[in-house]
Length: 289
Image 1 (cartoon, rainbow, N blue to C red):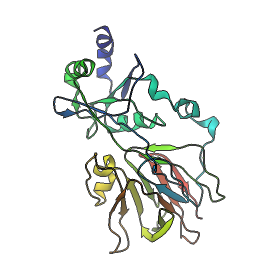
Image 2 (cartoon, rainbow, N blue to C red):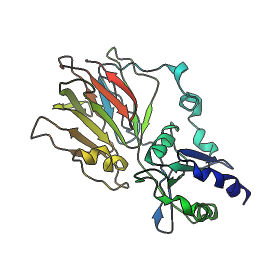
Image 3 (spheres, rainbow, N blue to C red):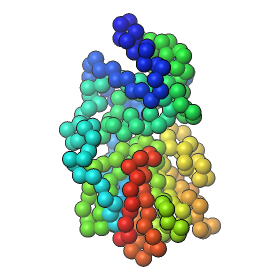
Image 4 (spheres, rainbow, N blue to C red):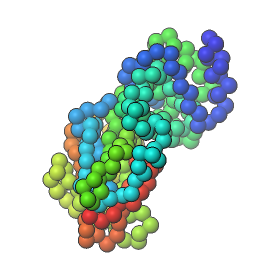
């Protein structure tokens, strides 16, 4: 196949993304063949996405969420990358398959490029861990032939949809799609974070800790696991709330339904601000309030 021959030379370059667009793609998912699971991610948006907000961070299983509270300064529309512009919401319909060469970071970056659904992703491990890139790059011809012949299994993954709301009530236009986790932490401050946690707009607790992790089942084997959170099967639609070194014996990791909308807010009387990141990127400060 001419296409396979043209792609083969790229398999020496880690961190490469190969896009194959020959027709209109269907859903977004993970590809697997012969019992092996190919790391690909499908992002389907449900009624109730997780969202996170500055000053407050909200998260829900999938769909739109918003948070109250302090503001993190975010770029306006003119500073967005092309695939973050509103007109690119149907980008997934133009792509049939994405081949990722690298590690889990390459998969996370690829998924973040799609504001709605994500085309099937076939990930070859050229990184260090490879939780999401489970295929041996030396056997790429075999696996790609399986895909082109249609003998594949698609594994769908849940994502969180995240927005930031400023203290004046303004919601930023930029929406983050998170495959692994949202992390709210104390940043460079020597003080613990004081964070108000709201579940479906009801205050459940005020956390004093180094931070909080809002994770998907896919992200349950990442930072959340290191912080003592549970490992959850990718097919279980839920939301993990994991504290980072909490200054309390009563606050333990929690697993919530994916329909839950979580809001994390930095209270006005907090000793310091907080910082938020989405799948390890777009890190910014959350002000009090």
